[in-house]
Image (cartoon, rainbow, N blue to C red; front, side, top):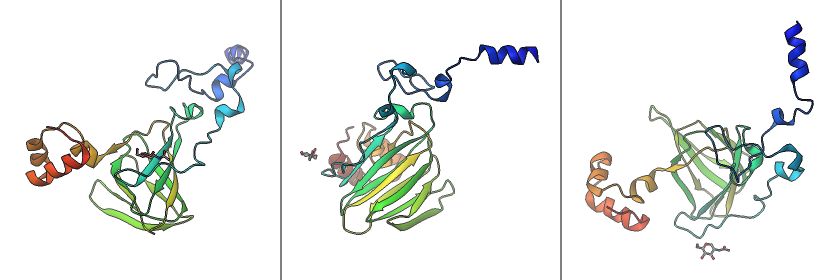
Length: 206
Ligand SMILES: *[C@@H]1O[C@H](CO)[C@@H](O)[C@H](O)[C@H]1NC(C)=O
């Protein structure tokens, strides 16, 4: 009992430091996230992100844009185990097959329609055309994709179960990097012409 009272006495009177840890991005990131910005320096704006109002730039090879609100863009999520992003898919837009190694994902369609799906470790496929207002979850680490399904600009807000979900796009991992073509052919069973064609389009070398 005495030690319990002593513990209460020793707790800081302001519990801010225990409630949250807005990331101080000028200090180095650690495996547990960024060090905390001093509570005295915080304002409400440290807990607000306004970057989802504008569509991302979809003038690119996938006709799509991902605007992240991860720790780097939104230091308020540091240490909270969550983050978000806005997806914009122009009429031909696609977020190619990819994984987030560190997070499950929840997607909410806010405009248009999106064909979304994932593939389980057992290679079972789960996909459907989602309409405005529909939600879908993508379990952590599994390959998944989103495709514009309505020929109009489509938008989704996604949230992640980590402030740093990570992103690996399978096609870019294979064909935008420097893994030598003979190795890619061995590990994918694709032929040389197909590998060279994709490397030319996506900027791969080797
Ligand atoms: C969108 O990106 C393209 C390609 O990088 C660029 O040429 C264009 O200026 C960008 N548009 C806007 C509105 O930023």
